[in-house]
Image 1 (tube, rainbow, N blue to C red):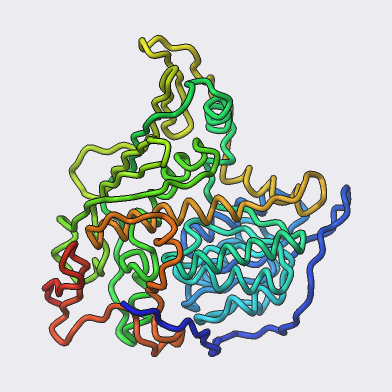
Image 2: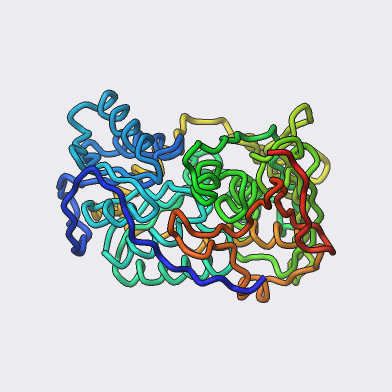
Amino acid sequence: MGNVGRRVFLNSKTIAGTVFTGLTLRVHAGERNELKVGLIGCGGRGNGAARNTLNADSNTKLYAVADAFLPKAQAAAEGLKTAFEDRVDVGDRVFSGLDAYKNVVDLCDVVLLCEAPGFRYRSLAYAVEKGKHIFCEKPVAVDAPAIRSVMESSRIAKEKGLTLVSGLCWRYDYNVRDIMQRVLDGAIGDITSARLTYCGGRAWTRPRAEDDTELMAQVRNWYNYTWLSGDFNVEQHVHTLDKALWAMGDVPPAVCYALGSRMQRTDQPDYGDIYDSMASVFEYTNGVTFYSYCRQQNGCWGENNARFAGTKGYVTSTLGKGTITDLDGKVVYERQNVPSDMYTIEHQEMYKSIRGEVDVINNGDYMAKATMMAIISREACYSGARLNWDDAINSDKSYAPSSYDENGTPWNVPDENGRIKIQVPGLGLVYHTVTR
């Protein structure tokens, strides 16, 4: 598919709100200035991130919220006001629409980017342009053109001294940090291979509302469309792939080949165009090979784990636990877990960076590379091709809609019979028959 232009739609629906632009500077060390925080994307993770940020720094105030759908923005504002009282002062700064992120960015010092991943590169670029500090949820993009945009935004943020913290939260878990640092310090010798898993049940679906356009119906049901979520391995399995990237000192693999399918997501149109199982192989030029398995299928065995083999031993990092064994299987180190709320810690460290208490944090490099690992895996599954990193990251293949207007054309549109096209290895886009 050829590249589709990424035009930004300006048609925000607002309750009210005065818009201004300006540059947010890093505060001086020791200052406790009140920081105005804006929330973009008011789903479960957005509400969670807002709670994390308010718990992380006592001199923050939630000042504005935005979502594609007005009721969600209003509900988030009301729920957070109930929970945090005077720490939430959004007033009439509740915005909706596909460009409402601009209203929030313009009004706030710190922005939480928690909208659907397909929109995230746009709000990141705009927040950096306006000089704002950023918490950016994972994944950061759904295709290579957007990844390149994220990399450029990260570079500019670094030049401006802006804080950019990633929602790849395991990097902030004290227990996982301990295990991964030991790996980087050579506890298992040179890494030779890894087994990477994220296998669980099916995720949610949302039916269209009566007055939805096709684009807004897909936005409402965003998890189930590649142009919005990146497919489930990009949206979810990116966490485990990020551990693999971390173990390799943030050096990405050279090659990926894979296979994937759609076996349970077959019985209703709300499943969109994503897969439900993928298996990928990542190869490095030095012979290191990673084996990746992820699925979202009910009634199946599940695991969320990263296991690394090295020339001196093995390490297991599953959720917050970690164990290192030698080549004979003898345990040489077992992590005694300490309390670690990684979702709050990432926000605590973000504010330390903003307030000048630590060096400026910029997670842009690894959050882009980890997301690209998931993207190359997906594209290898969809195409059946053996892909190399340089070609994949420089690809012009875009999943963007014709425009970011609620009446724009999504990348994949059902026909009059409710059939939507699925990417089939070796065949390209093929209609998948469902009954709407």
